[in-house]
Length: 613
Image (cartoon, rainbow, N blue to C red; front, side):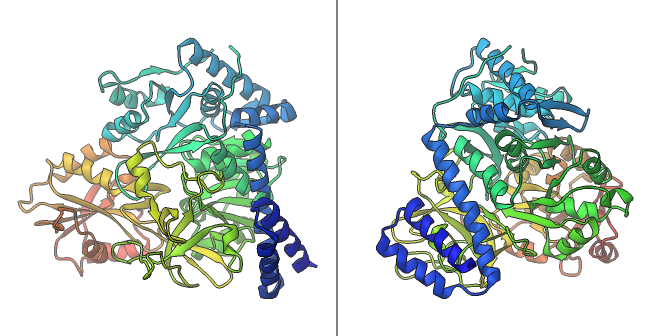
């Protein structure tokens, strides 16, 4: 029966949604029927196809009806008006859907009174709170696009993010007045305000219009403003809602920053679109996590890999078993702690997914497979046109066959994840970045077949024989540390400026037991002139904590290519091992707030996990 049901669903998808003719549909269904093996695979396929079908049907319905996010939210308000929409854990303040709607209307009205019009950009620079959601939602109602700025940024990076967005104003939180001074120092930049006052609702014309910008460092360079259109917001929120079988009765605990797509789309999106109550935490706290979940009767929690490790590092407490959480939703949970996390905290389901803000190749682990970040059908891969393709391990460049087309990976072979771009399909389009040059760098030609185009994820994954996908590594000049993407180009520029323009190479190194990669900086200092105490003080003012190098290496000079690009391969291989490196090495001792010399004894202590990173 299961096999027959899957074949029926497949018939419906290929004929009605994909639009293939019968002479292609019937052989495909037959191949599936004959080639499918085992109940487990059929169950996985059924769950995945269900999420795809619901997502496709709803996105296309909203496209046809021109249902933008404000219009969808209006339907949510009509359905759940007096229900609690948002709870801000910092104060305990609760907003109903009606109150959130009224607040966002006041925002829209204020902006209109101040002369803002459709297509204008206003930056939001503040910490998590309910008003954050009301601000960008109010802007969306009149077609004003929000630029969601990372509140950890300062100096050049902050000014850069505001500048590239062409923001006409910045809404800032009073807690970030130092950031305000930084941005305001740029002449003729932006208006600053933080208060809203009346009532009005307007909507923009198309689901393909821009909703807001989320900044991502991508694979190289300074932060880039990724374009999020209305249909993308819906798609990202709907994928996890339908795929992981959430309901509007769930209560979601969102401790992730709202300038991230995980916090603002995957999390808050369940409130805006599906009527779910979302608890917004100002900042993640490992010691208060389970107390909050119990207090607000949360049934779903959001995480990044780091959060799970931090929670496991906490002493065992009664509160960690007193909750009603049935699902942990997020990405980056290491396979080595996956089952321990489920068992200790009594979490029945890990809803691990993969997907960058701008990507068209999102994945979901809908069957609770330990360690997997998603699944794609091996038998009928063209239903969801994504693929792992071979790359050069040193340069990460795509490897092509004699016909010029990229070579797909075999099961068990690592490769870069790519997604075929179909611009007239809201599920397959790639909206890119504000900067067209940055957009072009994420697109490759002749990937699936001659003449097509595909999105380059910049991530290396591995697929098993059943189609389960496992994250392996990030490519390029970006690495992930403490839940944040760190752009080495950005950090190199800042450190070089602090060190009187010395050559600085930044890269990520693996530390046993730690999620992601710790930052390491190789600094050319032949005269031993660096004042480490001054350097630390200056660095703390210029870089957020997650971007500060954990390790330093001082050497006479750094190797460059013929085009003056830094060579990082050997540096990454040497890592921070004093037995392999004759140069001076230092470790950032967070408890003392300074760099200390890294010798073999300290090295062993770090490897054993005794020293906190």
